[in-house]
Image (cartoon, rainbow, N blue to C red; front, side, top):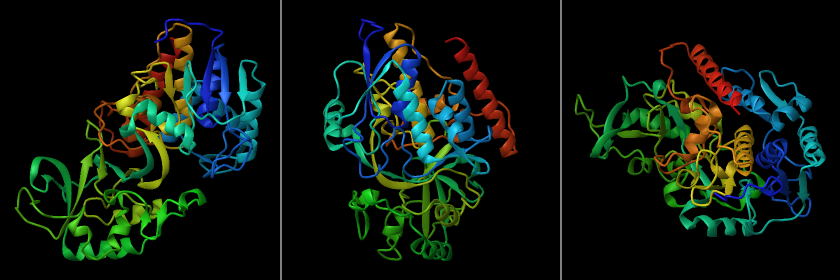
Length: 447
């Protein structure tokens, strides 16, 4: 860390999206001067159309309001940390039942006005083509321009930067029916670390027919160039499961559903096909469906994948996605305060870090800006409790034990288990949220 803690130093923040604006707001609110770089209106990404900051591209919803939900819990944490996003969302909200939704233009205008009015924030309207010198927060988003992406590539190395997000669904362990599923090794090799969901021929055929006829998610214009008639132009191993299935009725049985070497540990029975699930976290509370990268609509994923024996009542903590998304291998690179371990004067924030979603991106900007401000002022870093949603996300993206890193949104499954067993899911989620909020409040009180 730079030993010189100059409160008049201007901190660079690259990108005026949700994460960048939150980072700049935290810095300025702490009395730190900020230089906020934004290439609009000089240049737009293929996805962005509006000239204001914090433009919401895909949806106007910031997810559920209720505290007993992952999104509601995270939003309340953000409010307690002085979130600009939450403040502007309240000013621009529209009716959306149990969700917090906003008028996109009004929301962007509110964020833009507050950022531009702050005396400690200087706006620099130009494209950043290389990482600025000095302390910098990079929050350039999933559509980072080619020139800046190349600069980041040179900084972190070729093995740590990804340009497509190809992820399989993740389900909670407690929702898997272990009376139908069983533990076994992968193809008869190694330890019995995989959960196996066996299929008889008739079950496989019903699943196959529904899968090949399921509805895919629509493509954004800026993603279509990355698709071919067979699906995303990615490596063969990242092909969407529905595209693989359309190559032939038995293709999956020679791929991710291959039953070779897998026997029931009690009956020694073999099956026609087997879906395998692999632990996503060291605690074994989350499991991803191996080989099930997909571009299906979320509702279709729930419908079709719930046909898999053992997953009839599966709770999907994250649905599969396959879209253009620039992100770094954060567990290998970042601390849970969002700075680079080998270059602590450089922070990352937003979707580039592997947090998935609007509020998650904004929340990462909060913690990056808060910790950068404290570094400038010579104060100790803030480490959020693992029981809080933002703390759990921060730990997930910075845990070196996470292999084959894929972006993650807020969900109850990443929180440590409660000390008591609560069968009712709603009450269990509420208890987890109240525990996390209390723990976070205790940390905030010490700042």
